[in-house]
Image (tube, rainbow, N blue to C red; front, side, top):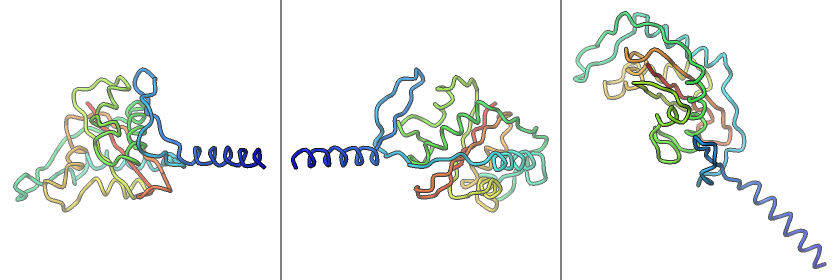
Length: 196
């Protein structure tokens, strides 16, 4: 009876340990920095490539189309942005965006789960740049709806930060990624990273 009780305790211990597993952040040298305080999301999938391509296409159409404008700081007029070039989709920036999309599932915002600024993901991947910007979004399954969320039509200047990022002359490259986390609050998480 004592052996059966001990075996039952071991099995229960293993089950509890598995369901409460914690995530480990990888530092740039590949060593683990220890467990985070947030449990692992049990199921995480990438957003399909066709949805990422939709955001990419719509962003370039936006930059080169008739809606390339944003509100001025006084909210009295639109500032038109003309002759913007198309952004190129960059594989390394997509990798960085994927890392950030996974991070915002458990730590929403432009600060990484370890407390560093969002742009440090570029340092971690040795991505050189003079300028960078990040757009994050949650709750939309489709690339089109996510793009429209970032487009911020009808918002005042203070609410068009994502829009201004997409229309910035400082940027020539883009990375886009999203993840689906069904047991999280918003289910769908998207990141766009822009650099020069």
